[in-house]
Image (tube, rainbow, N blue to C red):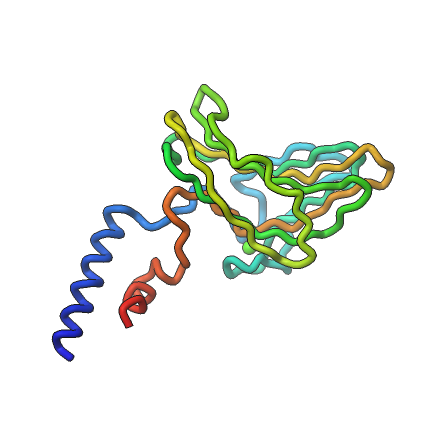
Length: 204
Ligand SMILES: [Ca+2]
C-alpha cells in the first residue's frame, strides 16, 4: 500500500511538472461564456432596427456551467449579422488551432443561415489560414461542435466569427443562441482533468 502511495505521488508530481512545462489548454478568448452578462471582448457588425445581439440571462450551453449565453437575432432582409472576437498579438503561434462552441437554433427561415469561421492571422499581414466555412448550423437543441486546423508560420493571433445571415426574401430570418466559445492551441482536455482532484483521479 505504501509503495502504491509512493508510486501515485511520483506520478502526480511528474504530471504536474509536465503540465507546468507544456501547459494545459488555455482558452485565448475573453468572456467566452458570456457570464459577464454583456458582450465585453466581442465586436458586433450588422446592427440595425431589425437585428441585434444580446446576452440572455436564463439559458446556458452544455459545455460549461453558467446561466447566460449570447443571442443573435437577425430579422432584417439580406443582412449579415456578425459576432466576432480577435485575440491580442502573441496569443497564437504556428501549430494546430482547436475550436469549439455551443449553439442552439432560435429560428431559420426563408434563406436564413448560420455559419462560423475561425482564422489564423498575422499582425499586419491578415489571414494566413482558416477553419473553412463551418455550417450551415441549425441544431434544434443545444449542441457542441469542435474541430481543428493548422496555423502556418507567421500566425500570431486568431479570430472567430459567428454569422447569422439572411436572404433577400421578405421574412427571411436567422436567430441563434451561442455559448462556451473556445479557441486554444493545446489539445482540448476535460476541465476536471486540469484540477488537482482531477489529476489524482486519473490514477485511482
Ligand atoms: Ca454561459
